[in-house]
Length: 361
Ligand SMILES: *Cc1c(COP(=O)(O)O)cnc(C)c1O
Image (cartoon, rainbow, N blue to C red):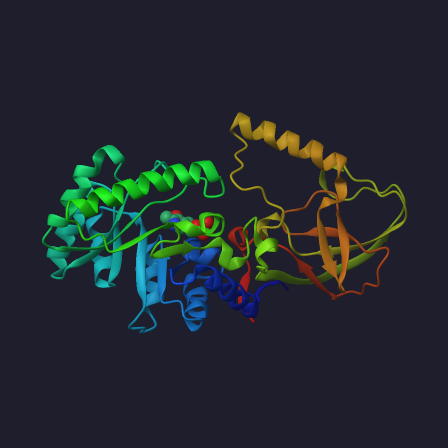
């Protein structure tokens, strides 16, 4: 048996820390990627109970899931630009605020609003360096023209940092953003809510909080400043010892023949493997030469430092032996008390979670 346990009280703790830092700025709880793996609606519910009423998504399904509960004051912002008429119509029906970063998207939102028969709400996206959605500084005239659409109510303007943790890059992007916002204001555009910070910029650039901040990974404590800020990890895989055996000195453990035990060893087999998200490397493609080189480098590191992966059994940290399998891993429990079916705690990034039930506790 294995379950991903979400520690709700830790999320609540993180929200309190972040709220303190945010001060008067509105927090958009970013619940994209199905709530960073925890479930968009369930995560949003916890945040809502802590007073967060603004949510940002990147999928229609996430917006629909959030709207299942009737919460009058809940605002939902779609961070992705879309010009797909059907998707837009559904977003408008769900009263989702759209992102507009191009003339094409503006035309599409305006048309969808006409079809649905109600005014669309939108935020304008400015590209200050990310290179994804948005009007470039040299396209500011196009952005100014957005306020003329009959069926669109412009409620905000935002940009996104591509290196929020880097002071120089962050300052450059922020300056470009402010210059564009000023131009819009001078042209008489009512810009509404102005926002730019993600988790990294939020922490390292408090002077950039403006009207609102968009926080995702820090809600789960998954940011480099977690320790410094006192943010907590919010979940773990709860598994159990499925088999317990003793193997003789020199015996192999796992695929590849890279691990031979140096002593008689008590091993515990645990039913969590890379299929479930343990120890996976994101974005690895065996057909891409660069990835193969990276993977070789990783393998060398593994050979040098075999015992870098661990799990926790009965409150004790145990090294993982050999390569992690698809559906199981093997832990060295020679030095600790360990019985069959004892509970095991395995750390997995929820973004990598698969084939497992998620339970909020
Ligand atoms: C993902 C995302 C965020 C949140 O980023 P975190 O670093 O996880 O806080 C904010 N804004 C946009 C546009 C995003 O895509």
